[in-house]
Image (cartoon, rainbow, N blue to C red; front, top):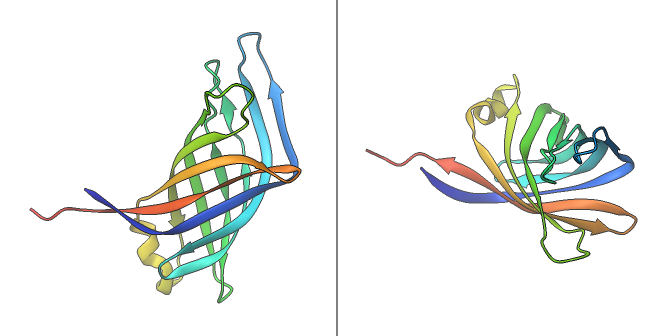
Length: 146
């Protein structure tokens, strides 16, 4: 398997972004709403998702984004992102590395090829104005020949 860069994803939290801590060991749950843009070869549009990311006791978040990608012709695709969000070890930094899989689903014939695509997002997160955002390249898995 090889990875090919095919575009980018950028997301920013809206007004709803909260962490609810639920145990003394540091476990918790993020709830947030994000919006942004996916731009890849043959597919460009706006993304609107919710994130229900658990925070593990080791400080790693597990982004769990679900929502809708609306492309330029008005078609909608289901958008799913799952990953790991690792803190920058620099003291006081709010930056994170976010490594995720991205999957899309559509019954629209022009977009059904994306139902089979395995995408990877190599994201970098950090403060964006009064909010927090995530940006980075989208990579597509390309099977190697025999």
